[in-house]
Length: 204
Image (cartoon, rainbow, N blue to C red; front, side, top):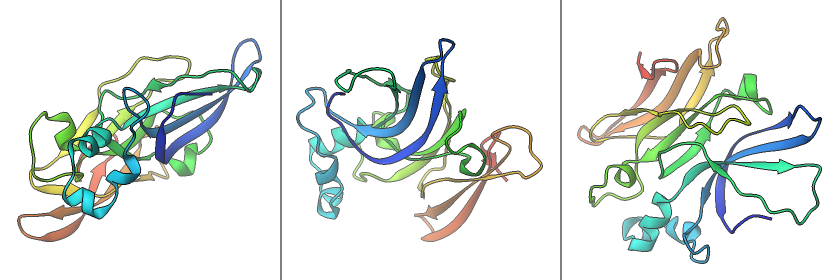
């Protein structure tokens, strides 16, 4: 049992067995909740009409979205309460991606997200719910709970779709590869393929 929340997109999930032989299922996903757990407008905020004309609650809901980890103990009763750990200091994120080919259902260390800039810059904007940054986040290796600083890629007046990680077939590290995203230059009204070095998170 957990507190009320809503989610659209999951990250990775995997099995962990501790030193005592107890099994936990680690589940990472982007969650939306609210302070009083009773007014979660994540679905309502996703309607086009509300994206174009959001109210304060829609904006607050989106800006409260965070990448979170649930640890599900397999040796406890069905009525056990569980909480979650935030995996990044950045809120207003979505579309978690990772090295699926090599780390799906395995312990992993990096995720790549898109972020809503207005949620983290503390600035007012007429543009709402646009992905104006990509985020590389190093994750704590369970049972560690230490949150690392994110690496953020952004470019003024450019917007990005969800990241896709493509591993280097000759690489040794989890983040050896490239991150692909469809970018949009709103000044020149052009789309383009953005290619980032996944390790440095800089353009290639």
